Length: 330
Length: 281
Image (cartoon, rainbow over the protein chains, first blue to last red):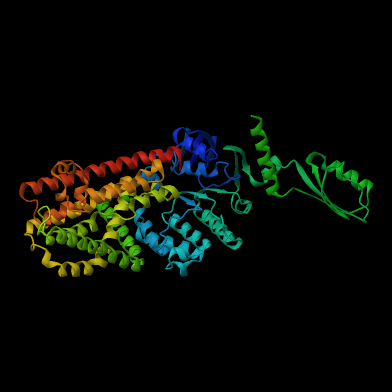
């Protein structure tokens, strides 16, 4: 049985449309116009125990809404979901003790107190056995290398240090399912890397199930074998990271090194992305690559040639814009 | 399994949890030492102006009493009201809840296995304890200096009733303001609602002047409102204005108000969360 199961899960927000200008604002006091925003439009998903799944998508795609639904903060408009057999929005205490949600942009720690006080509070709230609490805390603190900051008021910590403390606080009760919403947002490259390294290690050693939302490709590439791409509240891709290129990358990048500075016009073969004689980069339709390379090699004097997949960011951006076009057609 | 430890253990564990929350919020309050010292001093300022005001009034009327109150009675009354309000006023409770709803921190209480209202109550008890600790010496000094204005110590039962009325005033103030804060689930901004409440509270609780000064036609509606139990009632108990069966009855009414607002607060929270999870989040 899947540990997380979503069936046609949908959430529509009703948003007040504030008209422009003072007069319209006054009118808005009496009669308000609302617009329905379909944040999540029927998502089906099954996640097995021990999977590390990434939700990828642009801002407003519905990633955070999905995580909020799964952690029971909001109720769905329609559809169903279970996590470890619980319906999240029933908010049963048993369920609350078995999962954790980390929001990259919110903090759960007591601002004016050292993080260790918040940890002690969590021990009580989640009724963690004292010995187990100490063991888990020491292990996490050690892994994240934050022992010397435990006694410092949280407000004096850097963003990266605070995020690490947030992670410890969320993991103290050893949740079986972990929801991470943009855990590396705003962090510098080193802090991002540290958090990623920690999450990978943690997931591998404990086999917990993790759903991570991000729009940083690096997070996803470093951590998740399975990627779910969400756009406009729908899943447009669910599979491996490398599969994304096969599915959405309709092109390959061909780089040609000519023998001399005289470079012919190559636009009939594909789109010229970069031309710095004697080097040219071409975007060529996947199906035509062999033919194109063959033809060029037979006609021109070429010193070097390479064929690559376009960068993943680009492929995903293409996927998003493809979804946009589809959306407009409806 | 933890579940098999029995009910007693469960209660012990919960007590321990609440004790820990209390301890940690005590620590948090102690961070703001200066803020507390200033707040304590400021509490004594209004009473000084009140004393000046009433001494001017007494000079103007050339009498030794106003509406049955001697000058000494006024001073004693205001000092007692100050004590009452040290229990029933809830600075930043409603606005704090509204802020948490606006910035989304309230989510914590939907996700973690901890109850918002219980948590707020405990942190508020901690705030009050720290406040009493810090201001105790100041209160004792002022009351000692003003001892001449008091008719003397009341007997033990009255003193007990006074303490009970103070504790109930604390609870009533808490559940009233928490309810106002929870209205922010619908309106986000509750500062104007809070302002109206503060204004009504100031006049109708007896904070501004003893309610006995009002014409008797006004007394009846005041008796059916909860406000007087926030400040006037404890002072009246101490001064021996209510006694015997009437005292027992009024304490009963105060308790009933506490229970009622406890329920209203709980219901508001229940529907507020339903709305929050339905629309926002």
